[in-house]
Amino acid sequence: MTDGPGDPSAALWSVLDDAEDVPDRFPSPFDEPGPHPLARRAAEMLQRELDAVGAKLDLPGGGKMFGVLVARSPDGTIVFLRAFSGTLGGHFDVPGFVPPIFDRDARLAIETPGERVVKRLTLRAAAYAASSEVARIRAEAAAVAERHRRELEALRREHATRRKMRRARRLQSEMNADARERMLEELAAESRRDKRERRDLEAAHRDERRGPEAALARTTAKLAAHARLCAMVSRSLMRQIHDTYSVVNARGELRALRSLFPDAEPPSGAGDCAAPKLLAFAYANALTPLALAEFWWGAPPPGGGRVHGNFYPACRDKCDPLLGFMLAGLDVREPHLFTRPDAAALELRVLYEDRWMVVVDKPSGLLSVPARDTGGTRSPGNSDSVEARLRARYGEPGLTLVHRLDLDTSGIVVAARDPVTYKALQEQFRSRSVKKRYIAVVDGVVHERSGRIDLAIRVDLTDRPRQIHDPVHGRSAVTEWQLLAHEPGGSRLAMFPRTGRTHQLRVHASHPLGIGHPIAGDRLYGREGERLKLHAESLELVHPATGETIRFESATPF
View 1 (spheres, one colour):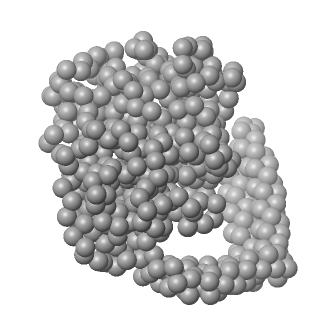
View 2: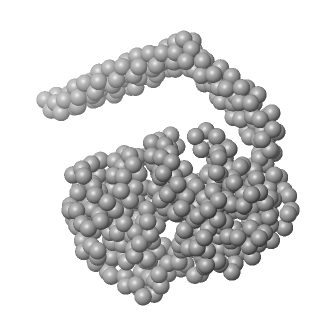
View 3: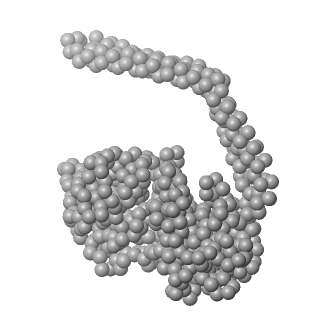
């Protein structure tokens, strides 16, 4: 690797000496199997540079997406450019890396005063939320609610005692018919008095709560108004900032960033990824793009889903509209996407069947249910699945899977053959009374013997179908695990999901706040391999018809 030519812009690129395998067409930045070998070599050079610099990327949350673009200069030399996503060390401009695509002066004129306004509004909202007035209103409402709870609970206990005494009196047998009739009338009157007493207390509570609840509602509305104002000003500021971005393509056509996205609302960070920076700089300097690679370097992001040193395709939600325009005029290959194995060759083994339910051993690579295309409809090419096969086998179109396994996961799946059974089984899964045990082999050496992971997760809206950890908006997800053995290059674990979230075990294994070791072969959260080494080994539930506790087992195939 040597420095570029004497052109001032050439300080931002390096010559790639061993560039013999130049692709005849530009590989799609959305290729899932990984970048072209030429771009991979350039990326490995940048990785060595990052190691030599010793950047503080390994601190928690300090990792960064980097990218390289291999290109041909006007004199025919093969060079490569470097870029990072967003900022590096808080800066958009870093020596050796291509610049951002926005107009610096225009952005500075908007961003500096705009950020002052947003900060002032945010501080004002925070000050009101922490004020003594808000604290007093909340405390008064809470105190009234707690006193009412105690009073109502005391009355419930008193009424329970009275009901017990009335039941005892009803059991008295030594009295004549007239006396018994009078006693029953008295008991009925007492019961009515109890009900009236409770209604009166609840009415008195409602009257007393009106004042504190109205004050609390006014406070809540004021806090919400502050939040709406901050969000509105922030959105307006972001729209103005986005208007400082000009996007060019290989034909030399220029478009405003917001014009490339639906409703002119680009997602956060659009235009700041490595790929658009690299392409924009190449076009501006008469460089012909040849191959692109993007990789994560350093500690994973707070939400997880990125592994140090791994290559990743451009994200569809954020980059598809932008790169779709920027690549116009280049001869770009169709993206190489992940393809499932030929499911027709995969055997679906029945472990148990009766008139109510069927339990099967799903192989890795077979869908649980027919897949949907991007429009949400069933796709004929994705129709083969556990559910479809079972419906065909038993001639029962109403047969329904009670739960699902990921395409890449193998193991036990339960299906119900009628709606009553389905509802009963689903309730067991919903109430978490079903006992499930998975076997996983994770990359690297796990030193702890066991653990419990409680990390809320949700879908990554900019990179579906990946899931990320989100303590605010995520759904609760709990996993317990035990170390079974150490193996060459990995560790074998037993994993016990206590909730059933999408990709739960895969996220909990890979996330640094979880086990910190991705499951072997995990193409989404680790490194792609022969297969995902995750298997649903056993499942225990109560038979919905017989009430018998039954356990199913499937030998782990790895």
